[in-house]
Length: 468
Image 1 (cartoon, rainbow, N blue to C red):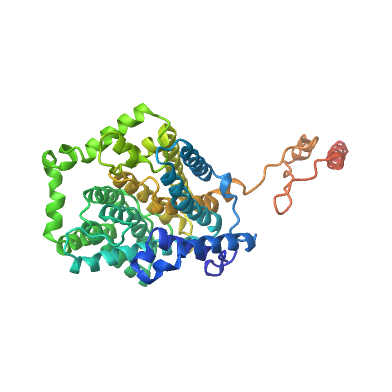
Image 2: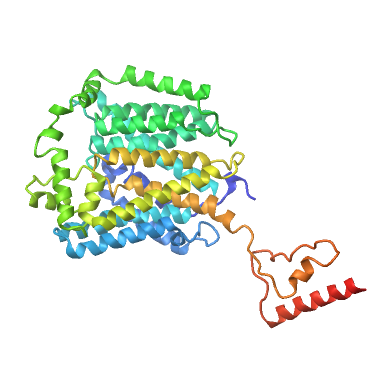
């Protein structure tokens, strides 16, 4: 087996990395001169050419043989069909081809090219770089901003930014505990900037998500640098938790804490009292679902909200958004997608530990499980059903399925007993003989007439020798 550093990378990982930086890190918005270069289209064309012309022996898993990929494909089909009866057909079609399709391509590229540990490390590094770009820009913007709520791009409002940082914080922490050296120092600084960035957004949903993923990380057994699992309450984990709390208390301004403190006085919150608040929007969304349970079309919630007497607001809840737009079937498929991803994380967790540098699957699985928890909490207050970061995370889950779990299920092909083979394996009074092994490469033995006659002749010779 090749050393990890010499494992080949599929050429399509580079456009895949560019799509992550665009879709998750919002690179063209953070670097304005890149906005006019149409990097997303370039990345998609580049990836298509790399996959079509690239090597077949590297990064060639059968993605759509996996349950996760099949469910996402079904979800996309539901979304595409919903355009036919959408109440805002032009906008639904535009989002289908310009937003959801790009996210599906991102998922496919990651799942299609994640074939070895080196590629897994590469994609994790790109995700963390994208997160670092967002969190560092948030911290820098806080110094000169006139508002107390920080956002770093037109596509991410403060709540969206908080969701991305909350989702990828567990991944950064899990990898932090699994490595040594300078990388650990870099990740420690990154985690600190992510913590501060989450609170600088002023997002109360983001704060709740931070509490949930923080509790998950505190009580989970995080990986060690030797490939095993550490103690649930190790000194290193307790020190890291204390350091994180200290950073938050020292660096976050009092105005942010005042906004978060309003969660203790919800009786005066506009989200509960006004017709444009989230509770009222959710109520109108539930009424719309009851009236048309098959959905109103992808990305049509705002039009439905206006028809229900609202102010054309967003859903601010991924489940209300999905239910109104894609109907009950949208709910069912999303639940199955998330359950499948959690199941992959659990299966990787139950695998025998691997020694470095092949131990990356475990911290990535544990970190991404925390990412899904963060998505469920923050997404409860956001229209985040089609978030790009979700598709990137699911792509890595599919890659883990191919990298860690699929080989173990086909490590040794099952060989059916040929006629007379039991006479070879066990003769009366003699020792048990080994069963015939499959040839190298997993090919089955010839099952035609010649194969059967050969097995029968061998069994007959064995019986003759025993009788003599």
